[in-house]
Structures are given as structure tokens and as C-alpha cells.
Length: 100
Image (tube, rainbow, N blue to C red; front, top):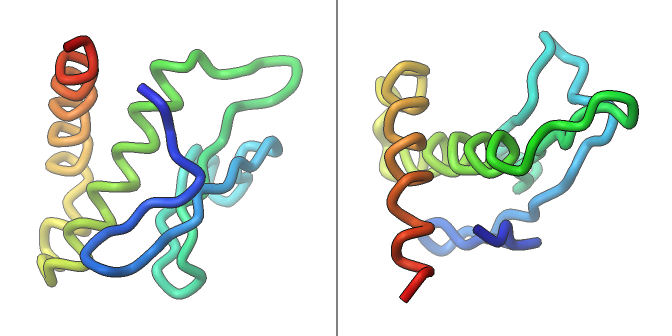
């Protein structure tokens, strides 16, 4: 799966930025920032990089947060279990679509 540099969610364009320091706030590995219009993703530390599957899953996790926010589904936006499970499903399905 190719992670884009920019992503449009319901008419709003978000930049995708990599934080090599690992997004140190609360040990986060990703963050959806509505105000800044950025999805931050960590590739891990130089000494301990994350595998690409983990980075892709994390990217989709933040995208699902963005989708829920844009749809006004605040309860789902804050439901980490839903966001994690739904992004996991997307991570399984999207590569199958790209193989065509």
C-alpha cells in the first residue's frame, strides 16, 4: 500500500507527515490533527524502525479518525476499539484491490 503525501477526506486536504522522533506525546505512533490539517505518522526510531505493515495500519487508523470526524460521528471518533478494528479491515482489503 502506498501512503500518499496528501489525502482528501470530504473536501478537506490533509498533509501526511512522518515524525521520526516517534510522536513522543503519550507514546503515540500517529495523530490526526484536524486544526493543522495534518496526519502525523511515526516510522519509529532510527535504532528501532517500525515495519511497513505497522506504519500502513497506523496511517489507516488515523484516516478512520478523520473520516469519523468529517462525518460528525464524534462517538465513533473517540471509540479506539472501533477505529482500530475498522482500520484493520481496511488494511486487509486495500491490498487486494491493488493487486488487480
